[in-house]
Amino acid sequence: MKKIETYRHKKILVLGLAKSGVTAAALLHKLGAFVTVNDKKPLSENPEAQGLLEQGIKVICGEHPVELLEDGFELIVKNPGIPYQNPIVEGAVKKGIPVITEVELAYQISEAPFIGITGTNGKTTTTTLIYEMLREGQKQPLIAGNIGTVASSVAEEATEENLIVIELSSFQLMGVTTFNPKIAIITNLYDAHLDYHGTRKEYTKAKANITKNQSETEYLIVNADQQEVMEITKESRAVIVPFSTTKLLSAGADIRDGWICFHGEQVMLIDDIALPGVHNLENILASMAAVKLSGVGNKDIQAVLRSFTGVKHRLQFVAEMDDRKFYNDSKATNILATVKALSAFNKPTILLAGGLDRGNEFDELKPYLKHVKAIVTFGQTAAKIERVAAESGINLIKRVDNVEKAVPVAYRYSEPGDVILLSPACASWDQYKTFEVRGDIFIDAVHKLK
Image 1 (tube, rainbow, N blue to C red):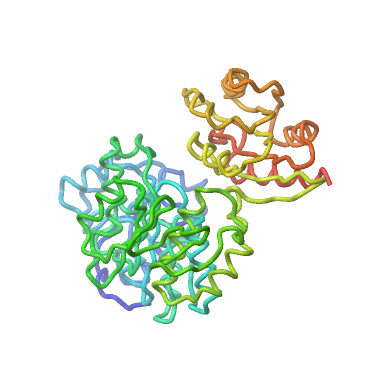
Image 2: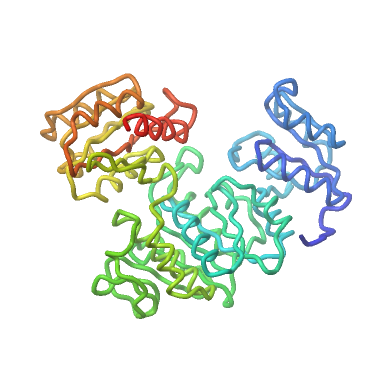
């Protein structure tokens, strides 16, 4: 990593822990800063804070006291999940104290260039595809960010020979000042996290930060099928590389006569791609553009796309049993994600759905249930989904206690050639700690059928 002197002898507050806060605090301490950590969880229940205390870092736990702002901090490194309405953050902004996220710190110390991916849907799949294609092409990639690996810990180990592929949330991007990826990608934009950002305009503005520092020597890959995304390009100085699943482009990534193409060159037949779903073609085109710009050859791209069947919990192929295919889409925590999953299959489908009730109805699913022959429901929203199913003419509807019990019921309703799809359209928190836990239970239940 770069031995920067930026933070030596500076008083810095790390606000909120979790993985990124712990890593940022330890790194800043190593860089010679005077670090104070503040986390809401009590010290007795906070092993991460206890570990930092043992390193000689000042720790304040149990609350976020506004009085901390009187201690003369020159910078705040904020956990992305802490909203800007937090009194300490609001107070810092009023005082003119810079507030950044750990991603900014990672960029400043990294010897390796970044490929940054943001958007509403498809970030994780696109990030993983790029990583796998770069690895196949011997480009020595590292993977980081919102996908689960703390960016600054990856950046500490990176060299000039590496490329860091990083998934970025709008929360993370609100806290960048100099972050500048060699290649930036915006997959798409839909309503999301409006409880955090307040408005769609502010959400879009946060996403646009991925390109705000780019120059004419960098690239911005964007979804040409979304006008809102294309509006962002007007403010970017980067070379714009569009992708589209619906129209031919003079340059960029598109689909021609059943082929995915880059700058008009045929790269691979769609029929040879293992990853299902029309929506995944967007992710594939964006990924292909990024790796082609990074010097990866067509054979390496083809090798990955022939074998890659999806990221875990994101329309993940689990197993085929008695000519039935099981897919785990537990990450579908909203209606739009389930719509995309249902649109991926043109076969009779048994849908497993339900979860946390956030007060919304599910009528938006109706146009996409035409191939659904049965629905197995669970969780707080079971009755709401059952109503939509009945009004859509689905006769096979069964409520069960949980995902584990849903799997054998779905199998009994199925016939050879059917798809059995977990795509809940809801968050998991009414029954499960995370969507990952819910998806793992589904996978285990599928394997128990064997």
